[in-house]
Image 1 (tube, one colour):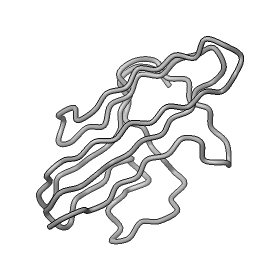
Image 2 (cartoon, rainbow, N blue to C red):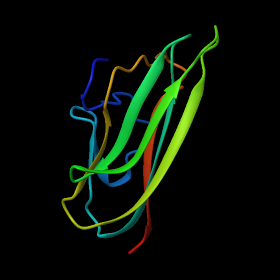
Image 3 (tube, one colour):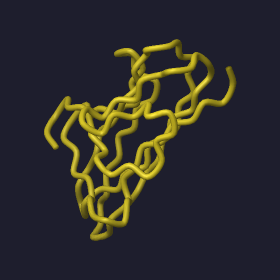
Length: 116
């Protein structure tokens, strides 16, 4: 991926309430409350990633990760946020990203309502 793009996770395992839109990569809040969002990203050997979890355009959490050897390394980040109905939360790149992608789901995005 090149710089400053929304990350779209096209494979969806659980989407209770249909809040996540796999066509644009955004989660839309249907119940106001406290949410937690988590991203795990694995990168190609000797490459790097630069990601953010974003809520309504504001950065909640940012991770810059670089792999210096011949392994596929992974990193995770987590953010909590108070969200109101129709708010959007998504993941975006803030620089070049070299994700390791395959059917094993090394790279993922998840969110859950914790409290209303």
